[in-house]
Length: 288
Image (cartoon, rainbow, N blue to C red):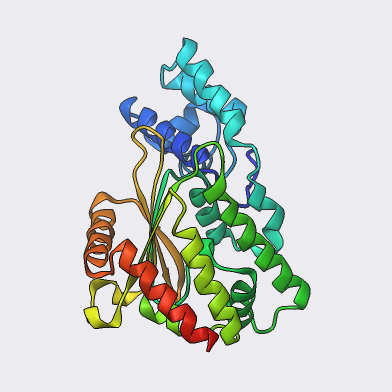
């Protein structure tokens, strides 16, 4: 029986999709595939949906059923072992909800991250003090130890931007509200603005502020992130936050809606050089 995971890795999601495609090409339903290899239909669908670890024996039986043999089967099974390796974030399972665990997995595997934040500075760009202020607001009943763990998780996520083996390109559009609304003291905000200016100088980071003067825009409904991956035929994924939680979308029409919205926001935001000048002026305001 396959084991549950705290959150799937992107490779696990990709292999699950591939299993589904192979089954459909073979002309079999999930129920028929399960019956042929003597497992429940739910086992097949859970494997395909990355809702459980990829059991080596079960995957091998499915590949044989679908007519996948030789080097193609061996390569697939090699990837199964790799996909089941635990991500670093699973060490924070005590403070990492399952749905957000998926987000961290996507973030860690992406080659490009496009993020829009209307209310707070993006997590990948937060200072420890700003991060703690945001977390204490969002989790007012958490113990100091739990807050410390949540801060540590967010700070470790930031390591992805400095990863030597292919750091992703981050393009962040931040509403002016996010940098003007204080989180903590004025000193905390001044430090946070300084961090934004420093991070914007990284070759793999583009930062734009969307000013009040630009007026109402299509991003007013809430924050979202678009992930792109260095995996052939793997779709972009949109992550959307709301009061109901985090939702993930990979349908082409929905992803295109968020992609076009992000381009709209980029057009209305200050250019990267003007953003840096805006942030420098704002930092001086906080230091007064």
